[in-house]
Figure 1: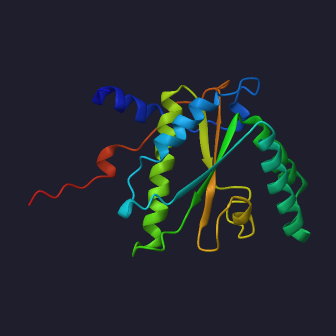
Figure 2 (figure 1 turned 120 degrees about the vertical axis):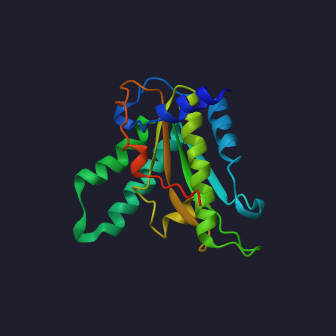
Figure 3 (figure 1 turned 90 degrees about the horizontal axis):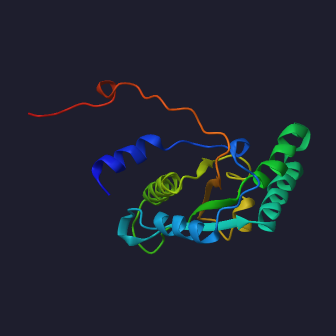
Length: 193
């Protein structure tokens, strides 16, 4: 790995959404396992490793879709939206794999909760870069059941833990357009004295 190769990897990382996936191709489980292993090499305070991942594939995608759409239907009451319900039911089925992103709260050490959350975010960046390196598409969503307290238990999380979203992965059928960033000079300050 050269610095130039890494710079290209970082700059070519894109969010690729389920409607852009090739739904006829499935990513081998061995690649997904390596992607998750790469996630676990993220920096984390006190070596707490506060992440908890659940991988959904094949029929598991249907189980996830049914869970979150049924939860939405049960809890939405008069705010129920048929289009949202259908999206929650159908979008997961477009992915090859979906990884739920959990944060297991570090309780044995004096680590602020925000640092556990930040460690999980670093793990997700490792997922993003790994997916890109494998030529796959993916994106991190905080939609669906993410911030629903009841949903945590479906993913094996406890009261003090957090569900931080889902990472969808698939082969790319429709590439994302190149990204743009504001000039670096607008986002950096140098202190030299």
